[in-house]
Length: 239
Image (cartoon, rainbow, N blue to C red; front, side):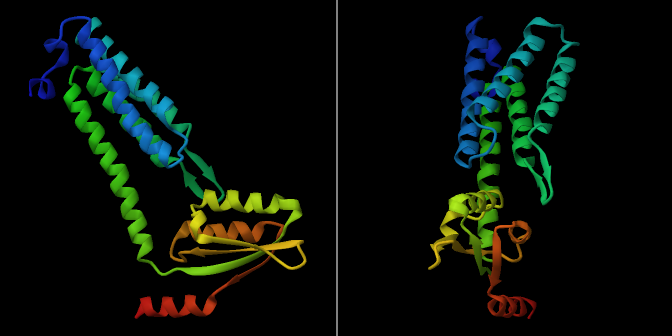
């Protein structure tokens, strides 16, 4: 178990030690990148791979080439650079801020690269596992909490505009995380208007913002919500 707790730069002769660390940094970043890729997030294999490998390489330079006094400064510069990179994926729109988790993932992946670059490959594996568990558990917990909340259904009638309106609505649903399985699309008799019925959690701020976004679209004719069921469930919760 020495490889798990020891310094790989001391366990492996040059140049095999740095090579093994660089490969391990890329492999660890791929684990996190795959998790982000499955959720269709803006950061994936390439971004996290380059971030982790770059942080690992700069840390190895500070550990093996530069003097001991220079190592903290080099690592600090890596953290500052990653901060600018992470800020680029944070977006503020009219309905809130997005990209915070992606930015935090970039920042945490850089920390994994620094740990591996310092020679501790086993610690890097452990840090990668902790980040992966945090992303999976937090996402699953969020879905579980929403599943336990009362939901309602809304019927949205809109002008088809040759199919252009449905594309815009699909983009809005995707932006506010309304799953395709919660949507029922149909065409009206006149074939000039369509409607979609979708389930939403009225205690979820993003879902309420989705309704506001839909109300502002000029293609929308009407939005009918199940007010009776909604009021009954809210009253039940207050009791």
